[in-house]
Each structure stands twice: as structure tokens, then as C-alpha cells.
Amino acid sequence: MPQDLFTLQKVVSELNALIIGAKIQKINMPSDYDVVFTIYNGKTNKLAVSCNAKNSRVGLTTVDKPNPLVAKNFCMLLRKHLLGARISGVNLYNNDRIIALTFENQNELFETVSYVLYAEIMNKYSNVFLTANGVILGLMRNAPQNLDSTRITLTGAKYLPPLLQNKFNAYDNDSLIKAFSLYLGGDLSKFILSSFNAFSPVTADELANRILNKGEFTVDNAVKVTNEFLALPISPVVIYNGKSYDYFAVNYPSISGERIYFDALTSAIDYAVCIEEDKSNFNSNKNALISKISAYEKKQIKSLNALEDKLRECNNADTYKLYAELITANIYRLNKGMVSANLVNYYSETGETVLITLDKNLSPNENAQKYYKKYSKLKKSRENVEARKQVILNELDYIESIKFHVNSAKTSADLNEISEELIIQNITHAKQNKQVKKKVVAPIYREYLVENFTVKVGKNNIQNDSLTFSANRTDIWLHAKNYHSAHVIIETNNMVVPDSVIKIASEITAYYSQGGGDKIPVDYTLKKYVKKPPKAKPGSVIYTNYKTAYATPNEHKELLK
Image (cartoon, rainbow, N blue to C red; front, side, top):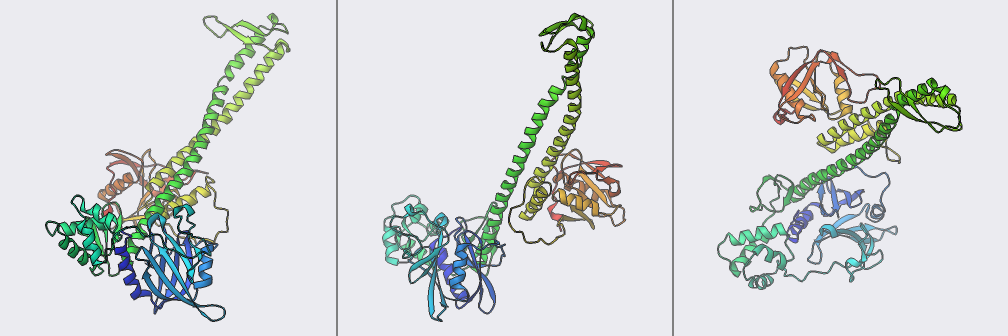
């Protein structure tokens, strides 16, 4: 994001036309680094002020973010001083990347008080300060004091801006001439970036390209092109380079990618920032969910290993039975006080002997009974251990299905549904705070239109159950054979479904499966032949009367509704 002086000049120019005179109606802080003012100036808008390291900004937003149940301290401070205030000014401060928002409000004595909110748009050093009469009333994030020994950023201290870097002012013609006179060749973009305070790396690249496209470098030409560039009218654009979205106050021809044009710069900023924030939040939530699932999986594997050890011990039960029988058969040869006996194994065809350890404090009969009891105990334990082992194996299989759906998730809403499933299954726990009662929302399946037939795809185990068992008996149900996959329903409406529709639905099923390779076996049958076993995990079913198709995985985006 080009959070440079060039872009912020355009932002401030636009905000002056949009929010001057607006009244503050509400103030919320959806996160530690974001504050949203609900403002009214003929119509209601939302003004976002953020010191998020990647997406710090001041601008209008249309996105509603959930607010914490308990307001943060800085939010309470802003509400105390700025609720009901009017915005009287938006300016760049100290010729730096600092936007100063001035508010006029009345105190309890009906005296007019002026407040200034300084938003320092400086990447990881971004911060927001509320001041009155130049004194800091509060700040959004506490900055380490060793960051700038010449600057105190504490409540009650005088607000001082960060020290300006010793660079030329791009908005001063004499400074431009002096700066470009020092250019001796080489990477012009790096020279511009190191010489001026107005440009981010991407803007420096764009300006360098514009200068060099005019022909051989000269100071006069560089100064002229720079002045023309700085004076360009706002023409907002968002460029998608295949990986991320970025906003620009004017079009940068040096950057390739898909372009989306906007009427307002704040709209372009809001669009790009929200997409990147959603992507960042999605990846963060996904990684957190995978971490929780992996921790639970490790516990299950640890339990499984313990059961395997126990099972190996139980498998020795027959040996203890043999010991008991051999002691009984040879009881006349044994005496109390013996610590071992080497007895012929009459079950062996070769007549080999077996060395049996004895308890010298027990009689031969008591030693035999001891081994019989151990045999009986281990035999019963083996049945119990095998049953517990199967439960854990089923649980690990279920965890594999959860991991598949997490990796297949496309949106934060998909992850939230999976998270709720984990809470229901007692794999994770809900946060220990007061919860607002959640509205019951109908599942949002992936839906395709295939030759006038609706094909629905579940996004997780809960949705798979809901989709499958809300379908009509005559609908066609599909699932990848021997793989974890989405449940897919073709709504037949009691009509004959062409093979071409089943083929496409099979390809979609193969795409949303754990199978790899060019051909995935996909089973399909009427929904009436699909049953859920008692006490089965979400997404687990059994089915009969099916056919199998071999499908090449294909998302078929063009058919999505």
C-alpha cells in the first residue's frame, strides 16, 4: 500500500470535501488498532482511523465490523471527548505522513473545546493520538520509549511529531532542482526514494519510469515531470497483481495487473484494504484452527500409542494361560520356594521346554492360579482396549475430515462454521465470556446451475449432514469413494437427470475431495439409500445401491450461481 505523502495529500484533499462539518454520532473500536466514527453530514457515513501496521489509514468505509462486548480504554476516552463533536478540519501535519483531524465540541460548562486526533500513517510505527491544547490525552498503542529518545509519547506529555528525515521536500521547486542536481546516474528509483520524503518505493518506481520515458535524464526534465506528477488530479484505481490488491491515488502505468476504477479515493482504499484484511484474518483464523486441530490430533495419537502398548501386553495373555496349564500339569514336580521351572511344552510338536518364573512365596497351585488370573484379566482388557482403539481410530478419521474441510474453506464464515462444529464435538472450547445469543442462520451451500439442475455442495461436516438429510428421497447424492469429500446433491425435482449432469457433478465432487490424481472414483446413488449410523460423527454416512463414476477434478467456476 503506498502510504506516502503523495497519496496522503490526495486523501486529505478528498476528505476535506466529504467530512468537514460532520457530527460524530457513534464511536467504536472493533480491534486494538482500529476506530470507527459514525458521522452525519447530510447522510450517515463511517470514518475509519487505523494504525494497523499493514493497512494504516484515515478514510470512509462501508464495512461493518463486529465490536467487542467491552469497549477498550481508548474508545471510552474518544467517546468522552468527541461524541457530539463536529469535524472542523482535516490537514497534513508537519509536512509528514500525519493526518490531523480537528474536532470542535462543548464541555460540561458549554464551553467550546478543540481536540486534534493525530493519525501517524507510518507502517509498523503507525499510531493515533488524541490531544487537547497540544497535550496528549491518550493514544491507541503504547510506543516503546527507546524508539525515539527525543519524543515522549505518554498521556499528559506535549504531543511532538516524529523527527523529519533529512530529505528534500518534493513539493518545493527549489528543493527539486537541488535534489536532481545531485543525481549522478544509476538506479533513479532508489535515488528518488532516498532523496525525497514524499514517495514510497512503488511511487518512486512510477515517478522514475515517467521521467525516463521522456528521454535522456536532465534536471529540468525531472523537475517538470515530478511537478506534473504531484499535480495530477485524483483518479483512484485498485490494481490486482494476481496475489494482492493495492490502491493508488492515480493510475500507475508501470504496474501491471487487473484494474478496478473508483470515483473516490477513500472508496478505492476501503475496497483494497478490506480485501487484504479479510485475507489476512482468514489466514490467521485458518492457522489458529489448524493449530487447535493438530494439538487435539496429537493427544489422540498419544492415546493410541498407549493403547497399542497395552494391546501388545494383552496379546501375551495366551502365554500366561500356557504357563498356568504347564504348572498345573507338572504340579507334582514343583515345590514352594522355587523361583523358576523349565517345563516341557506339550503343545509343541518338537517338545521344547519353557522357562517359567515362579513366586517363591506361593505354592505351585497358587502360582498357576496367579497366571490364570493374569490371563483372564488381560483377555478382558484386550476386548476393552480394542474397542477403545477403534473409537480413537474413528476420531482420527473424523479429524482428517475436519482438516480437509479447513483446507477447502474459502471464507471466514466457512471457518466459523467449522469452529462451531469443533465446539459441539468438544474438540475445542468456547471462549469464557458472555455470548450474545446467535441467530439461527440457514447454511449457505456452494450452488451450481448445471443444465437447469441445481447442484449443491456442502462446505463442512455440519453442512454435509444438513444438505444430505434435507434433500428429497429422489435427489442424487454424490461422494468421493474412499476419500474425505464434500457431500453433493443434484436436485432432481422428480425428473430424469442426464448423464452429462452427473458427469459435471462428479467432477465437482472430485474437486472438493481429498483425492489426488486425474481420475477420482465418485459414488452416486439416490438420497433414499443414504443413512446415518447411530451416534455417528457429523458427515459420516453409509449408503447402498450406488454406482461409481471416475471423474477429473474440476471446480466449474463458470457454473457457480
